[in-house]
Image (cartoon, rainbow, N blue to C red; front, side, top):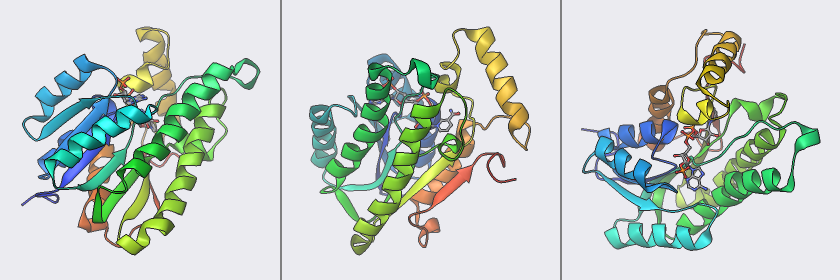
Length: 249
Ligand SMILES: NC(=O)c1ccc[n+]([C@@H]2O[C@H](COP(=O)([O-])OP(=O)(O)OC[C@H]3O[C@@H](n4cnc5c(N)ncnc54)[C@H](OP(=O)(O)O)[C@@H]3O)[C@@H](O)[C@H]2O)c1
């Protein structure tokens, strides 16, 4: 018996990194998992990895028409939606003096606006008792240089999870934030200009983590599965840190 037998889940940004590991884990727990992202090749490869319990729908969460296509696909399966992991986001290092309108609009457009409409448009499909999980970041609590706009998007997302937990409690829908510390993903590598710089960045980030290493996507996915399931039935409006102790000690 899996924790999510017979359930339907959606993981945005489910083709790579934390999203892919979470989709794999939710499927292993018995859920049928929809994944979405903007790149077809990555989505197809992810479906190969996840297996027959996966359905990929190409789309951009900051495009409301794409969200309609995604939710039409889930609706046509006829079982509603039990788990929504709003994971898709983008990041980029930019100090205040170099923040452009494009940087601000892209990060807020995807991480904040996209996350809001991902959840808003899911509301008619969410079954009573569903679990909504937003992906935060330890950066939302701290003032890491050159990460101001990204951190602000994650603080906004954390705020959403509190409000939405309150607004959806009447339907038994729980809303929580998962808060990863630095985790070894393509997204983290992509913050650096090349492979050598990425290795250096990861090494430097690991020195700040009390457990002395980066997280693995599977470790974040395990916590996502917990929040998705009845195992966390008395947890809502919370932030679950999976950060090797980074923001704790
Ligand atoms: N890795 C870390 O250290 C870390 C730490 C804390 C929090 N997080 C959070 O974890 C989440 C996943 O990040 P990751 O590290 O796993 O990075 P990743 O490997 O780059 O995964 C992000 C995924 O989101 C998708 N995506 C981005 N923009 C999208 C959009 N507009 N519409 C649909 N899909 C979109 C990407 O696919 P396409 O480009 O194909 O669309 C990609 O598959 C993010 O919310 C990130 O902020 C990561």
